[in-house]
Length: 168
Image 1 (cartoon, helix red, strand yellow):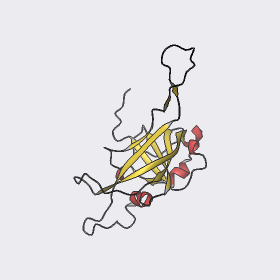
Image 2 (cartoon, rainbow, N blue to C red):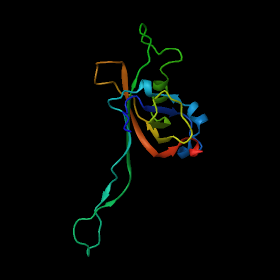
Image 3 (cartoon, rainbow, N blue to C red):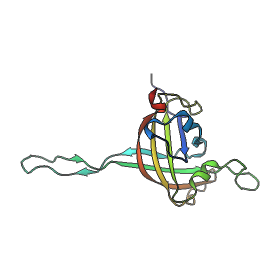
Image 4 (cartoon, rainbow, N blue to C red):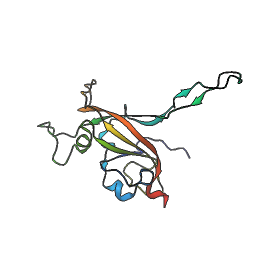
């Protein structure tokens, strides 16, 4: 059965390295920052992309063969700010996504799960995409419509696919 993807993406930010990024535990995920409510959908990117191409082949071969080279990954997000509507200051206990990502050079681990509704808790065996990223300098949004927001560049370091609790 085909299922619409809308509302079925959960994004968790881990500020501490998981013991094994390919088998992140439900306890490690529970200690993370739930980010889906505060990340702008329209420009969010977190995915492997086409690898580099190496145009090498032996002289004896006919045609143009290509070999896959280094893998590539892209990650970008815009944080929707959780601010007091009167003072425009961070709410006490709020704006946690911004707080986790605002300092340049911060290393965090992003965990992205597609499938169940976003609010559904993580469960053993669920597949996820993970990436360790280093944050860049917080930027001023060029689009002044909509919510208060800040794009934050992300420099992917490592990435892979995993299963919650190692699939057990």
